[in-house]
Length: 92
Image 1 (tube, rainbow, N blue to C red):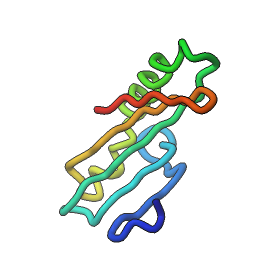
Image 2: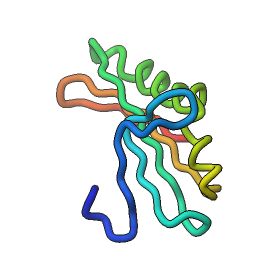
Image 3: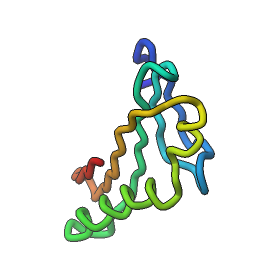
Image 4: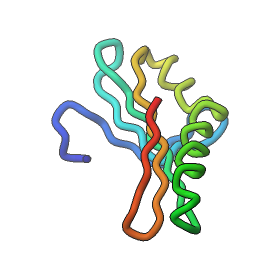
């Protein structure tokens, strides 16, 4: 992702009340910011639950707060859960 033209990719960036796993952003005032939070599930049955928890964490810890103050207004938020080679993605 670091090679994407016109985007900045950061991991473990402090924002809001914690640190998000991955943030991808374009130029402020013009584009979007993508916030990704990941979780590891202990079983296949936990995939949905963990993906929802990851998405909820983005909202609860206000990972978009710092980006809003930088001029971002459009956000894509992804909660991703992994179990072995499987994953589940929740989007807001």
